[in-house]
Image (cartoon, rainbow, N blue to C red):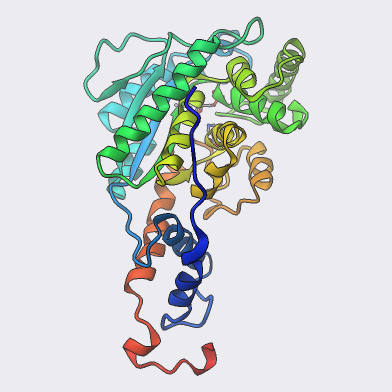
Length: 348
Ligand SMILES: Cc1cc2ncn([C@H]3O[C@H](COP(=O)(O)O)[C@@H](O)[C@H]3O)c2cc1C
Ligand SMILES: O=C(O)c1cccnc1
C-alpha cells in the first residue's frame, strides 16, 4: 500500500504571515476566522502571496450492500445511479453551487450498481457493482480496499497535474451515512447509537430501526480492530477512495476542503492512516447530521458555516469556497498601514 509520506508544513514563515495580516488597514484580528484561514494557506503554500488555482470538487459515487435491506436508508438504491446522471447533466445541488463559484466538478464512479456504459463525463473507477452487505460479511475484500485507496490517490494526482491546488470532496451513495456512522463508532470508540442520525430523511421510528440494524453489524464484526480492517469491513468504495485522495492531496500540499458527515468520516479514516493530513484541511460546514458535531469535536474543528445543510455531494465545500477565496484576497489585496498612509497607533 502507498505509504502517503505527508510532511507537516514548515512553520518558519508563520511570523511573517501574522505580521503581514496585522499590518493591514483594519483593527487587529477584525477579519476573524478569515485571517486564520489566510495564514493557514500561506503556511501550506510557504508564501506571503497565496493563490487558489483551479478549485475542483471530486464527487465519488458508489452503492452499499446494506441499502438492499431497505431499513437504514429512506430512499431506494437506484437513486445513486439516477443522481449520477443528474450530476452529469448538471441538475443536482452540487452543479448549482460549482457553477456559481466556477469550481470544476469531477464525477467518479467508484462502484455504483449500474452499468453506465462509458457515459461521457463520468470517470470510471468502478471497483464492483456495490459493496457486500456488512450485516453478513465485510463490505469489501482487502484487495478492493487497497485498490480504492490507490485509485483515489491517482485521481488526486491527476487533479493536481491539471493545475489545481485546492480540492473539495463530495459523495453520493444511498446508505452511506450508515457506513460513516459505523466507521466513526469503531475508530473513535463511540457507541453506534450516538453516531446515527436521519441520513437522507428517516423519521424517528426509522432512526430507531437504523440504530438496531447497525448495532447488529457492530456486534457481528466486534473483533475487527485495525484501521485498514475497519475500512474494509464497514466502508464504502467511495469513502475509501476519498480517504486515498485526501492522503495524496495532502502529500501534494493541496488545500483540502472538507464537506459534511460522510466526508469527515472519510477524513477520520485518512487521519488514522496518517494524522498529518489534518494540517491541510479547511472544514467548510457543520452538517445537520448529529454525528458530525462529534467528529468535528474530535478534530477540534470549527467549520466556516453552519447552515443546517445535510445533503452531501460536496455542497458545503462548494458553498464555503468563496470565503476561502476572500481569505486569500485579503492577504494579497488589503492595503497595509504604511502603503495607505493610515495611522497604526491603536493597532500596535
Ligand atoms: C435524491 C437524493 C440526492 C442526494 N444527494 C446526496 N444525498 C445524500 O444522501 C445519501 C446518504 O443518506 P442515506 O444514508 O440516508 O441514504 C448519500 O447519497 C448522500 O450523498 C442524496 C440523497 C437523495 C435521496
Ligand atoms: O452531512 C452529510 O454529508 C450528509 C448528511 C445526510 C445525508 N447525506 C449527507
